[in-house]
Amino acid sequence: MLGLTDSAVKEFKRLISDSKANGSGIRVFTSGGGCCGTSYGLDIAEKAEEGDTVIEKDGLKVFVEIKASVGLESATIDYITDGPRKGFTILGLQQSGCC
Image (cartoon, rainbow, N blue to C red; front, side):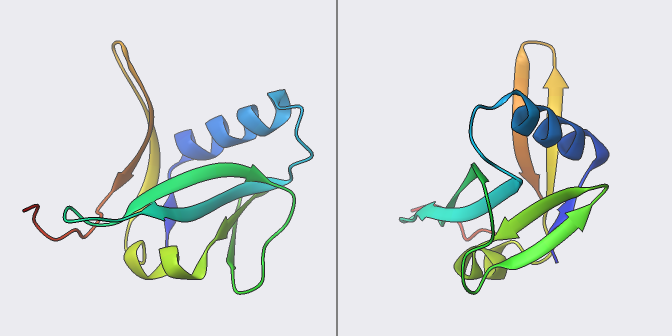
């Protein structure tokens, strides 16, 4: 099952709170593919869609698209602040090599 670090949960909650969207959680979905593997996207969502897996941690709901759940089964979403780099990253992602 997809994991979430405490820093990712904190940042997701901040984004939802600051957003003007009517969101109650974060949706993780596949956003493409290609020779280097699948890409994933994140968005604020109001509710789960049919087939989504719902993960809850510290009051945050994460809705994982069924296609995304396969590739993210043993991964963890983290939020990093490393100098000028800030953003979400997926740790432990199993990807095939690029062409």
